[in-house]
Image 1: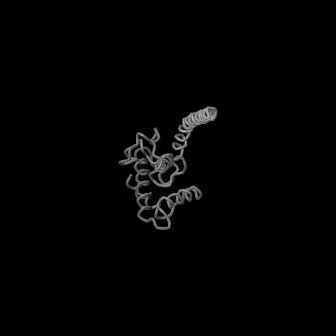
Image 2 (image 1 turned 180 degrees about the vertical axis):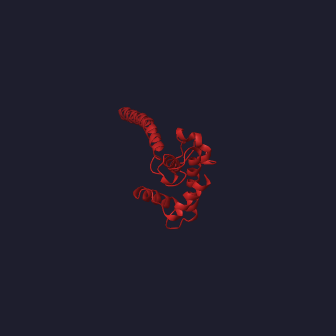
Image 3 (image 1 turned 90 degrees about the horizontal axis):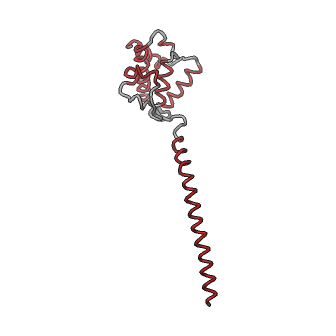
Length: 164
């Protein structure tokens, strides 16, 4: 009977050692996986935005001198990606309607245009199509047809131009 208990104790000791080794190995794996998971989580929002408020970041340095004209009440360190892209394109001269403007007047016209365009799209959104989807379609169409905008949108830009 003594031999039986010795063998059983030896077997249990080996099982315990294996379990301990497995736990250590799992801990090491978790320590490796944790930074990887955090990295993936951080990169998870780097895709295309799906709303007007996603992927906030700083206004580009070269536009900071016009932050009050461009942003109204938006924190210049927390500007959504869509707004940053619109303002950069507008200030970079990609909107021919504003080609006679520069500096603060251009910044006021660009800031106004973005704000009023989003306001118009949100007021006219439908169940079938969100304001953001309409904005994406408008952006795509204006790139394909060299900046041609529909009359409703053209009016928004012209009103902002007149106010600048």
